[in-house]
Length: 509
Image (tube, rainbow, N blue to C red):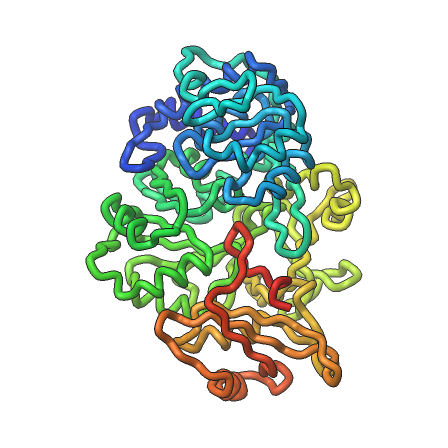
């Protein structure tokens, strides 16, 4: 698949202009609406000096303005950097400084978050503001004024090898890095994701994921590829109200992460909510515990769960057909179309089925590299089997079965040794999630004078549940080797998480 990222929107606007593209706050915006508005904003950006290849930061909550802004930057020839407005001022400043942003699209109320970053950037180039221009900003323009301008952007000369986006990693294992995705990467990903999931034009995707991460962003782009609708929520902070709107909107697809689905399970039995229209749930970002998978199947029997694996560096790698969930327990599926994924040892040699090693990915979706970080890029993008090709070393441990189905084991930097034996936290976490009282679980290694590293389990319990350390250990002893049984157990109200919803294990050690 070749093409430009925004070709998906243009195609949908030409073939099904009146079909709903995005629904926000009960307001319907058709593909023609979004196409026309993003054309106008793109033309304004070009007129304000945004040149081909320049970075434009979109710092907005999930909203129709955010969707329009993303498409507009791409159409103008710019490189879009979607920044989560919930990030700290320091992180926003870091991101804008790291990729040398001069142009910003944001909301008036977020000016305080942006103030430090903007001060360090010096004089802004183009700046657009939803809700009106802040008093402290010189030369800014109201977003609605730009959107109201008639016309289309000039052809910036973009080709599919140009950068389309820089998406920053969540920084769960270090500082955030800017992942460079080309138009070819984005265009291919939208096609491959839609095809592997079997998305249809009559689907309605209920999205609570931030568009500052690829998992959320590609809900919008893949939906445009097939011409279906996204019911976009700002967050999942008020889950009952969100699910009520999803029920009213008759969503058919709900993407989520383990923390989202854990919240849904906390709300069981979902009294008064008719979610019978749901045909598919998708999970990524972190492995969904098998125990949660079974509970979700009971709670939402019509919705098959698609287990997936991916990274910002390549967006998506594999998906598991829900019909195979019990036949291939623990698997995250086989590679999506036009993707090869295989397991290697420490020397880069391919391993046979059943052996654990690092997952390597090759395909049109693999990133260009990390912005401004050649050493980090070289560590992840290494020579492949084909001369001149770079393949992605994910840093994640996997095994594959004889039929090519992949099984996530853990991150290479998560694995530790206790009493001289390797401990994979994921193996212990899966057993902990079997306990009905457990809402969230994380296992880390902590220094120990005798064992070298001790197995520590940190738990958050379901509302009203009680669980003693002795009960946890008895459960684990019945299912795990002795070295894997947690010697230290801590219960917290909730576990610390990254912006993308992953548990921040570094904060638990």
